[in-house]
Length: 256
Image (cartoon, rainbow, N blue to C red; front, side, top):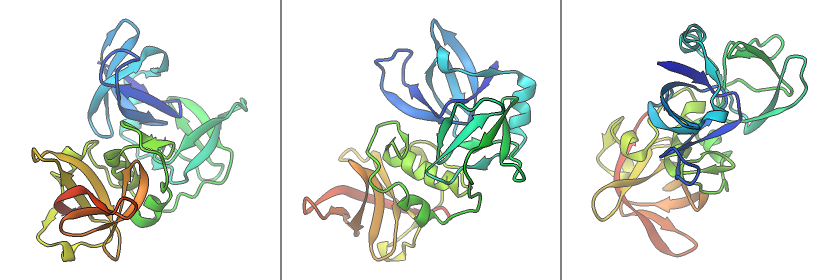
């Protein structure tokens, strides 16, 4: 088994070993992964954060030793909560623009430095390490465009949105809505829902196909076309623009 750590802002993870394949997720700066196999110019990986599998371009694969990998695995990294920050390698001023959800391992608050894959980086701007609420974090993604497989405010899908918002707040969730729905406590009625609960929605075949975060006053924030706020009731999500129900409610789960 070989190992790696993302040293680029965003790395697309594809379903198959080719550029034309759909992007099913993304590796964010500082996330570690295992390399299962290689095929020509591609690496088949498992992302440690959520055990998600996919293929990344070998040119984007930053391989590290098993010893260094285990050091990262056994050390808790801080999670970047700002929408984006700028980092640079010691003595090299070329910037790395890193987004919310990125991991900064071995962070030193005294000089805002961290070690990633044995390389020392510094944050160019002040980075707020304090935890933020689920709601405030989610609001920072408002109007982010929908992107299948995306996990950043430059493009994000529904389950990636939920995963990153919770990750920033110190809670790890699986990647897909069909996996996330297996967690937490099931609520029996819509009026039991509280801020931060997750609402899941199914299609005509009963498959979970959408997820969003419950807000106050029968509102939900979710990624559909863009990250947006809509009304929710026992039927599902009511889109105020189209005046129709866009998603059929299946279940509400309490994770917090």
